[in-house]
Image (cartoon, rainbow, N blue to C red; front, side, top):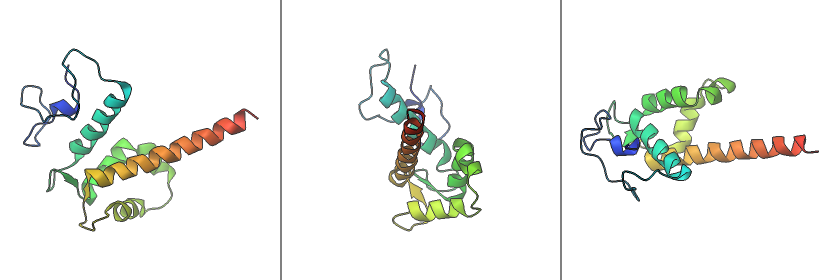
Length: 131
């Protein structure tokens, strides 16, 4: 079975197993299961490319694509926030080169920051329950 990333076509079109795939850094032989971390990396790449390129550059997210990704993939995070300008602030913070688009490297910064925040939250919760 192909991983989500292996299903991304070179043309950036829909994910279809019958089409040629992009090479994956450290891809595994077909019969070997990816590790948990490799699966997470595949998922992160697949999520980004599922949303990018619908309205322009297939390697970047514009504001609308980022908003759709956040609303679909991080629903709980967005609904818990009270700031109506949150997506605009996230876009501004992530867009390090100020081209009004978010590339994969900039997107990974968001995921890493949210992951660190979640880890900190759960560590704090764990400290409260073990006292």
